[in-house]
Amino acid sequence: MENYNKTKTSIKNWAEDDRPREKMAKNGAETLSNSELLAIIINTGNKTKSAIELAKDILNLGQNNLDELGKLSLTDLQQIKGIGLAKAISIAAALEIGRRRTAGDFLQRTKLTTSKEIANYLRTILKDNAHEVFAVLFLNQANKVKSFKIISKGGITGTVADPRIILKQALDEGATSLILSHNHPSGNLQPSEADIKLTEKIKIAASFFDIKVIDHIIVSDEGYYSFADKEMM
Picture 1 (cartoon, helix red, strand yellow):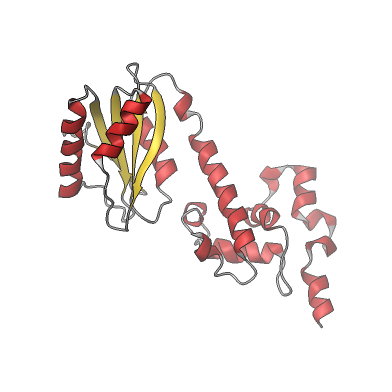
Picture 2 (cartoon, rainbow, N blue to C red):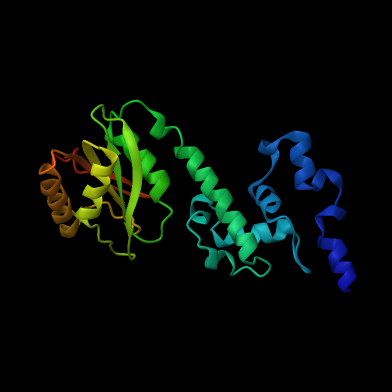
């Protein structure tokens, strides 16, 4: 019976047109379903399920939504029987590459122009975090991004950003202006009293070094909130 199951669930025993690798080589990646693409990353199944079946289980865990799948931790992925640490890492790495590709050209632009384009980049980078993350874009005089740094990670309801760390990084980078940012995992975009006070604290501290804080952008699955757009800077 065990040999029968192995034969039944092994992808190499399927018809060639049904094997995801062969299908991709023959027809292109765009012809594959999400579960087939994920099966290629997983590579092998276990004694009772093929890689395709495990992939479907993983997609179900992510509510059949790639955005939700991107939020799953390594521990979450390992809830699926047959997905160990190695497979979980492979999946997480592939998702991270996709995330970076989506955001990739933003930092190469010559100049930032709108809060919307900045927020789109920040949402791509930060939205999959289950906990609050505080990050900063460091800009030069021409408003070109010199670097993007995650300053701190916190709990589900908040994180603490140390102005000293931010200013040290700004001075090391030779930055002349900053854009503060953090995510709200809850989805609520309204800034808290703590968000407002922290923004003012960093703004005042930066002014002593002739560094301008030009915006603080909050992002979530619901969209974004710009302090500058709301005339709070």
